Every structure is written in C-alpha cells, then in structure tokens.
Amino acid sequence: MPTPITPGKIMRRSLDGMQSLEYFAYVPCHGQRSNRVIISVHGISRNAEQHLSGFAAQAESYGAVMLAPLFPKESFPFYQRLGSSVNLERSDLAFDQILQDASEWLTIRPDPLHIFGFSGGGQFTHRYAMFYPKRVARMVLGAPGWYTFPNPELQYPLGLRSSDLWPRLKFSPARFLKVASLVMVGEEDDIRDEDLNTSRRIDASQGLNRFERGERWVNAMRSLARAFNVPSDFRFEPVAKASHAYESYLSHPPFSEQVFSFLFGQTP
Image (cartoon, rainbow, N blue to C red; front, side):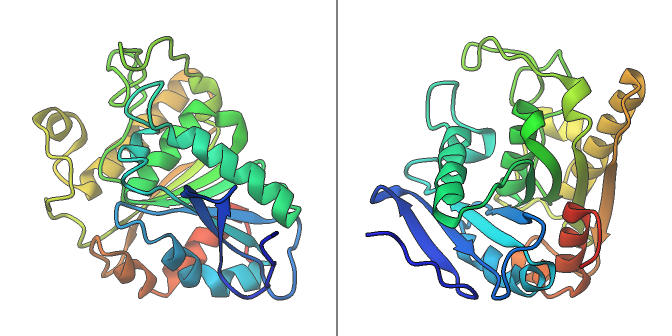
C-alpha cells in the first residue's frame, strides 16, 4: 500500500518494506517552490526525524521538500566513510536508492543536491560530494569530527589515494572544488570528547578539535582551488554558544536560516 503524502507532517518511509533502509520526508503545507529539495543527514545519534522537525519552519518559508535518510548502526556502522570498503556497507549507494524512491513517491527532482550534514552526517556529505561532485550543488557541514583532505598522498578516507579497501579511486578536484561549501562549528565545540576521532595521525594533520579541523579543511580546499585556478566558495562560520550537541545549534536562532540561505543561495 503506498505511503500517503501528508503536507506539514514528518512522514517515515521504508523501501520495499525493508526496515534497514528508511528515511523521513516533509512536504511544506503550501507546496514546493522552484523544485527546492533539501537533504539532511544525521550524526551518530541517528536523530534523522529531529533534523526535519528542527528545520520545519524554514522548509515552509522556502517552500522546500525535506528528506532525511536513516543509516542504522547495525547495517551502516561506517556510513560516515561511505562504507568500510568499496564492497561493504555502502551508505552512498543506499542514499542513492532513497533519493530514487523519494523522486518517484513525492514526484520531485532532488538533483542537483542541496545537502546539510551534522557531525557524522557532515563526514558523509563532504565525502559523497567528493565521489559524486556533478550531483551536488551546495552543502553545509555541521561540525564533522574529521575530514577527507584533498591530499593525493594519503589513502582514503584520510586523503584521495586508493588502498586495498578502496582500489581504483579516481577523484576530480577540478569538479569537487566547485561545490559551494559552508562549514559551521560551535564556538564551544573545542572539547575532545569520546566521539571524536583522536588518532595521532589525524591530530597532527587536521587539528585537535572540530573547530581547528574545520578551519584547516576549508583552508586546504581554498588553497587547492587557487592551485587549480578553479572558482570556488568555501566558508567557515562559528556558531555562537553552540557545543557539539545538535540541540545547541537549533537553539541558536540564526543557525537554521543560515543553512537554508546558503543552500539555496538566497533568502525566501
């Protein structure tokens, strides 16, 4: 039986009855404007539904359909990296299935994608954009724990070089550098908590906390864009009074509006 579409309500949908592949969707009460679709990707708390409830007012204001994939830990323990290897737990392929299903169910065209990802979702988002730069128009990364740097000498997911787990990778910096990107990190998100990857290698190359790592990644992408002579838009914005709790971002009123205005390149 088809899932009914109820505007103004967060809807949960399973693909072909499979509990391991689900997503949430929101259709604004007054309909979609200008084919606007925003995808929001959760962190390791997997609070996909909260992402849509927190952005509901902006979705109504902008006339944007919202989608939020759910990556269960049992099925996608390494969704942030797009999978544990090229053949296992591929969250990017699951994500594509979700987008295809949403396109048919809601009669929408998500491409080119406008994506927000928080924490682990920010990791997923920028790596997805590096893999599929033609599919992503703009992205906002909310405090990822660590990044794939545009370094061809480091193996993926630290850098762009192939490995035994990820053979024959072919990235195109000239393309992924064109994806407009905003990194937002809380001013108080400088704590090395238990969820942060604190390996010595990442500490040395990326920084000791999410704030430092976000700044370094943006600077690295800007530098590479200059080297390739590619027009780019990489920004870093602190979020006042925010820690790493997602609720602390939502409690800062300008945050949600900044996400939407950047992703759609304009105000309502």
